[in-house]
Structure formats: structure tokens, C-alpha cells
Amino acid sequence: MPNLDKSLIAGLPPFQDLSLEDLDFVLSHARSVRHPRDSVIFSQGESAQSFFLLLSGHVRVVRTSPEGDQMVVRYINEGGLLGIAIAMGAPTYPATAVAAVDCIVLTWPNTAWPQMQERLPSFCTSTFQTIGTRLQETHDRFLEISNEQVEQRIARTLLRLVRQAGRKSEEGIAVDFPITRQDIAEMTGTTLHSVSRLLSGWENEGIVRNGRQKVVVTDPQQLTLIAENRRARRRA
Amino acid sequence: MPNLDKSLIAGLPPFQDLSLEDLDFVLSHARSVRHPRDSVIFSQGESAQSFFLLLSGHVRVVRTSPEGDQMVVRYINEGGLLGIAIAMGAPTYPATAVAAVDCIVLTWPNTAWPQMQERLPSFCTSTFQTIGTRLQETHDRFLEISNEQVEQRIARTLLRLVRQAGRKSEEGIAVDFPITRQDIAEMTGTTLHSVSRLLSGWENEGIVRNGRQKVVVTDPQQLTLIAENRRARRRA
DNA sequence: CGGCACTTTGACAATCCTCAAGTCTCGTGG
DNA sequence: CCACGAGACTTGAGGATTGTCAAAGTGCCG
Image (cartoon, rainbow over all chains, first blue to last red; front, side, top):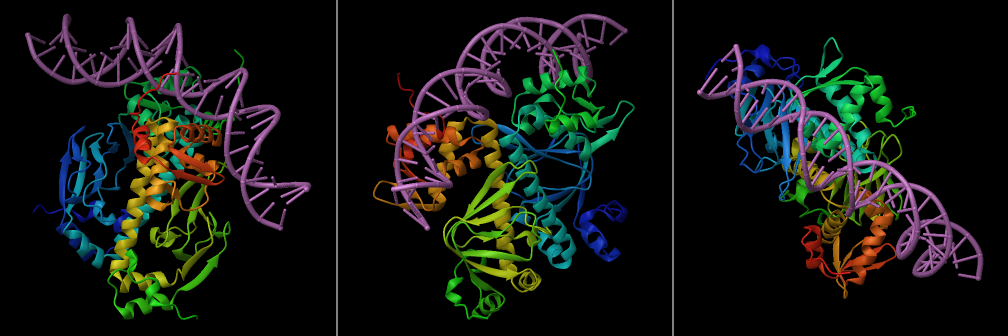
């Protein structure tokens, strides 16, 4: 068992304010695993044997329907939990997790869960808060897809992406991982064609800068107006 | 404090296999409250002071966006938990709960939560399993609304409704509580007009029987075909 | 029996998907 | 180092689904 450094996880929300012994306890059950870009961390339907914390990188979580349709459930950022099926009493993973970039993932066997649950109530609380937040986010997205037009949904999604995983660049705020038009389409319930058209239009207006698997938001304010459907209509 | 009977909750999933003393403990903190039809049990945004279990009746859970758009998050059946914001560390209720029919609701103050959590781990597990199931259901609905047509979404929703809250009648399986076209529209991300049109069409085909705030499914099999978009196309 | 909420139905329009045909970018292998 | 191929992206045309607007039924409660 490699010796993991406590500084890796100290200060992360799930392990905040833990004693040094507790941190050691947590790490004593964990393995650190490297996942290269595009590799699968766990698969939907697979028996859930482990749960994970993303130390570095970005993970895309995808759910597939029996008919084969896909959606991007969310992106996980550094410090985020994933694959916590056991916390919800699920015997299998409800979605597939793919490394959006090269990732380092802390991995615990599910057998460690009861012990951690018992010994670290704050970790437990934090986990359930995470699940609760995700449930609410999902409901918000449901409201959007139900009531808003494609243009607004994409604008909101872009704003969320740069808020949660934005990296400042010279041109503006870039999404910090490769993301395709198809990915954005699967987050917003539309097609890559609509996404492409909208993004191209916004690029002409100077709101974003596009690239292959890349989006940079240069004018968040304008994008907010679009998201709220309050943009000034311009003449043809 | 009225003396509540243990038989009320014995056998319900959250309290399964609890000892008589534990059941007493649970009930000693609870109040039983009657909520007439259409009354609000708790409101979105309101400070969460209590959590609830539905003893009898049906509850509609509604979420409203800042723009004023609404969706029906779910219906709660007898024995279901609701308002469990505290389990997710939420300071306020994330949605509004309305009695769809006259209801009886067991009500605990949030102060009872830590004690129950500590003393009744099985209750805890059950609660988190409930939340997990709901999260997954929501993702399934998200997939539907993203990829399926209105017709299929309504068919699926109807099937879910009669599966989860169906009551056998002479004509078929009826949804066991009053539900409007608008409600169905807000579950499926469409308009009451589309729902009305579809239901009327299905009534002509003998698949459902409609009434004011009433839907009876007479041919679930046919409805399943529609849900899976495998219905035989008929000539004009 | 009056009024209100719920429902139905029609006509029309528009958003957005589908289908199609390319262009562009990048990584890989020769 | 260059060529090639595959995946990503763009753009256009056309049309179907479904929302919007409008108006008129219908059932139910008080």
C-alpha cells in the first residue's frame, strides 16, 4: 500500500476539520489511481465495488437509457465525489464516469464505507449534502429544459460550466477541459447542430470564442442576458 | 402529545424491523397533522423546520423557478417521506408540497433528526436510499424529456402514475388522486393543450378514459407500445 | 343555477430537428 | 516531415412537431 500524503485531502470539503489520525484512517483504505483521458472509471450497470474522490482532473458522468440515448449528467471537478452508489444503497453504478482529461482518483473499496460512516459523521453529512445539491441542480435543469428555449438553455449551461470549471485566459473564461458540441447538446437536450449554430452566432457577436473541443466565454454579461431572454433584439 | 399507535408506522420501509421501543421513540417526537385537500404542507424557500411522512393521501411536490415556471417534481404516496431537507443539509425546502387529497401527515421537528439518525441507522439508510432512488428517477425523466417526443413522454408518465398510484376500477386502472391536464403537462415539460389533445385521441382509440381531473388507463399494453414508440401506424 | 376552473378544439406559426454535404483540425504512421 | 484519415465542426434546406393564441364547451361546488 503506497503511503498517501494527508495534504492531498486535508481541507477538501468532505474531510474538512478532520484530525490527523482520522485523515490517516481515511487514506489507509484508499488507493490513488491514474486514469488517462477518455478512460472509463466505472460503468453504468456495473456492480458498485468502490467509491471515488477526484484528486485532479475532470470527469464526465454519462447516463444511457435502455434505448441507447445518452445525457451528460454532470462534470465532476477536483475534490468532488463520484461513484457514491453505496451512499444511496444502489447495488450498481447508475451512470458511467469517463475521464475528460488525465485524472488522479482516490479509490475506496465499498467495504470501507461503513467504517468511515461510523467514525466520520462529518464526512457522512458532507456526502449527503453533495447528493442533495446534485438532486436540486438536476431539478433546476429539468425546469430549464421544460420551459426555456434552446438558446437560453445553452447560455445557462455555458455559464454554469465556466462558473464551476472556468479558467481565466487572455480572451476570457475558458471551460477547463475539452468539451464537444455533442457534449453540450447532451447536457441541454438538443442536437449538436443547434449548439454549433448558436455558438457560431455568438462568436460573430463577440460573446464567445470557439475552437475544437473548446469554448471561451468572452462576454459573460451578454450571455447572462441571453440566458434570461432579455437580449436586445437587433435589426436584420 | 397525543398517543400515536405503533401500528401506524410499523412495517413501513423507513421503520421496518424496528423494536417496539424504537417505534415508541420515533412516535414520541412526532405529531400527526391533517392537511385538507389543496392545502400547503410546506413551501419552497421556507426555512425547513420539520420533516414528514405521509400516513395517508397523496402529495404533489412542485418546484418553481425564479422566472415563475413550475414543474411537478413528483407525487408522494402513502408511506413516503417528504420535506427531508435536513437529510440533505438544506436550510430551506427546495420545493412546495401540496395535499392532492385530504392527507394525514406525521410531522417531526428537525431537532429529532440527529437522535433518530444516531439511534436508528436503518431508518437513516432507508432515507438515503429514498433520496438516491429519487435522484435516479429524475435523471430518467431528464433522459425522456431530452430524447423523446411529447406523445411518448405522456404515455410513460401515465404508466408511472398508474403503476405507483393506480387503483383498479371497472374500466381499468385509475390514477388514485385528482390530476389535471396542467399537472401532467408540468410533469412532462409540455402544455396542457398537447396533453388534452393526446388524451382525447387515446380515448377515441380506447386506450384511456378521461374525466375532469381524472384519467383511467384501460389498455396499458397499448400505452406501453406508444411509450416505446412502437405503435402500429394507422392510415388516415 | 351561476360562476369558476378545467377541458376541448381549431388555426397558425415558429422553433428546432432531420438530412445532407461539406470543411477543418489533429494525431498517427509512413 | 508530410500525407492521410477520423473525428469534430459548420452550414443549408426543408419540414414536422408542438407551442401559441383564441374561443367555446363542460362539469362541479356552493
